[in-house]
Image (cartoon, rainbow, N blue to C red):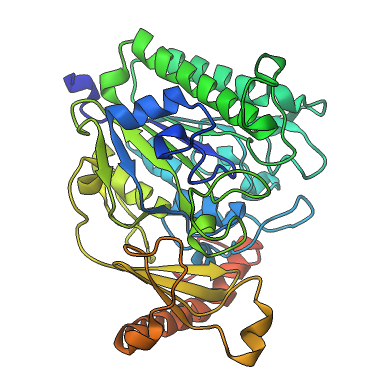
Length: 425
């Protein structure tokens, strides 16, 4: 690695509603994803990577801030008519990267508010082009910077267009360092795909879309190769949550909207030649909000000391080692704690949607050992009451902590207080 690029360039690819089992490197026997598979083959597959939420806005809020979305005041999906969004109080991943000299760009789906104060260019990105919210929300408008560039969006062309912009940005900033957040709109429904890929996959239209995404991610990899940047660039590919009406969870229970594993465990592969050993697998429980402190460590940035930051530096895991220390992960539906994971154990305390027999007291809490039972089929709570008690207490304490911060977080997200004068959450 050159001295110039001792700090890596970073390309972070996040697909929308891609399932844990939708990649052939994750065992999918139908869909073909050779370019993403090559990232796994040349680097690491993190098989226990979590989103903080099973829906997009809170998941993305956590990814960019390193904090649970409840702390950020964005625990549920935003619609265009909502007035809330990412507060300027939040210190984001791109802002951190820019502060240490990176050029930063985002291309794709934002979904963290659509008022001017919420735009990506107000939160650390030097350049932005994409949709401000999901492709099933209206009006569908393409933004560039802080203005609408077109209200006539051809969704079938979005994947190629975002990739074109990412390739152009990388080419213009090849002397680095740079950070690219490539947040593809697909495979969120409604599904759209360019004619070149229509009907090619054995997985139907959904498969066509995933294989198109794989092709275009390959174009980014080719650009890095052509510019001689592959060895100096950390590439990460993942999803914001589990699949919705189609897609594979790889045998995990539940899907999008659920805090079962199928809704919150996401595929994650990364490569950084010379730093990440090729063909590595990790079963350490990690979370997308760990990326901010991890990239801070790798890029020479800092994590703000004036607020709780939930992510931890997992650079040791990323490069093939072990996690720094055990911890619990908490999964919410809006403001209600649904589940706690610690080590192999996962305790379900509440659920959305709630099963009918919940009111009869016949279901929850449920305790699963994810090492033995990743499909969450067999409740072990009766045999391990001490684990149930410990995780219940952890959950109670954390939910109480979050509840104490709720009013301030909601006020910041709604713009009802000055972020500069707000007390840390």
